[in-house]
Length: 465
Image 1 (cartoon, rainbow, N blue to C red):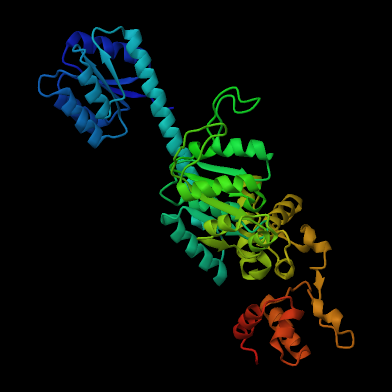
Image 2: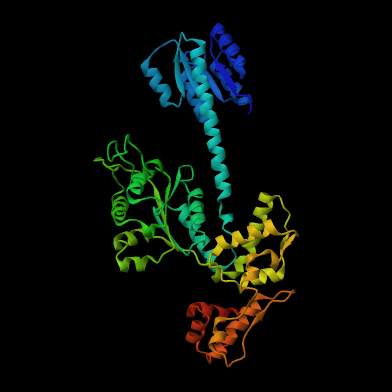
């Protein structure tokens, strides 16, 4: 750790000398000045972590110097020193940004306690800023790896939402599609990034504990409530609350969440006082919220309140063009983590990966790459390195082929040289259209696609309609 630096601005030579000697014994680099402007010059020349500033100076008022320090060096902690024990002066100094206030005559041990507290506060602030910087880098938009038009459109939407004042955002999609990453990206690329990100899974705790976790409780609210506890909503003031698996939230908590969204107020468990905080709510679910509303297990009014800015993350099987990019991204990540030098994936293995359904989505892809890299002895992943090599993905035929046993089977065989997935997809769509006499609805059903998805592929490959 770097040696802490202190500037002493004090016009009494004996006090200045005693402070300097003690701070040097304490391991600090010290510069001294007998006047305010000389002290400012020291700061311009070398900077400082802490300034010990006398209130009465020969060339300036200490509060004037304090203002200049605050404006020019806002990260410096200033401790005011004076023989005039005026409460008004102390209040003015603290309002102007002084860290603390010490009255003469003082004991050197006592002032060193104040200095140590200031140095610790400085270290903590530096560490918080470092962690915040790391988090921003870790969860930048570049972490959302994609090239498919639908994902690029979603990333564009997330950028706008992150920069906006949107207070409620609903993330939807199958398990493993990246809803948790999207929530983190939204937070760390917003004006709220310097405030807390609180993540809670709505199924992780019993209903009574979940309510206390979210809203806090008063002392004596229930048997084990031996003291007051602040909930995540209070602790996240100014930041973000991420409610994962919102579709499984108990009905009683749904009512309390709705009240908060409507009135921006809540009460701790057992409390009678309304509390107000400023938080962004990001809710996520892998369930069909409309179905939950129709079944009566999720409040319709809460659903519409959460659904102001819905974002649906598509399953990986609907964006196969993203698989090579994602796979390479995870390879680079695990190269660093496992200290390996994996160059990439063999074409045949990549073709199998792009033909696979990925029921676990991006999470499954990440796990497959991690396992493959741990098992592989070469510098490129092959079919034998991947868990998918033992599945139907190695030699796969369309589901509609089994429906028409009298027709020639349409089988995709992957040889050592690999295949062009785009050509395979074009041939599959062509074959489905031939099987159905050009009927797009039937062809889409055979391929387990929507009509819009089929039409997109017809346009993509310039097929007959």
